[in-house]
Amino acid sequence: MTTKLFVGNLNFTTDSDSLINAFSECGNVQEVKLIKDSMTNRSRGFAFVQMTTTAEAQKAISDLNGAEMEGRTIVVSVAKDREPRSKMVHKNW
Image 1 (cartoon, rainbow, N blue to C red):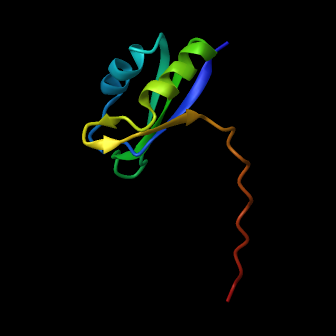
Image 2 (spheres, rainbow, N blue to C red):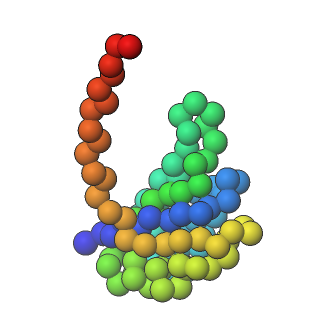
């Protein structure tokens, strides 16, 4: 069973290869999804890393949460399911 991790407070210059290198020390990295702004294509400072097993994900959390990466103290936790967005109601003024 794979486990998806949320990685926050990333340096805006951090790339997928840097994340793969860091997280592969904790186990097999299945996927890295670096979140970028759709308008500027610039990193938004967070990513999702998918590990092969729950044990590898727990190791990544214990080893990397609070660690320094490229000058920033990163946050690593189990990713939560995205809550559905409510529809915006526009009023005509």
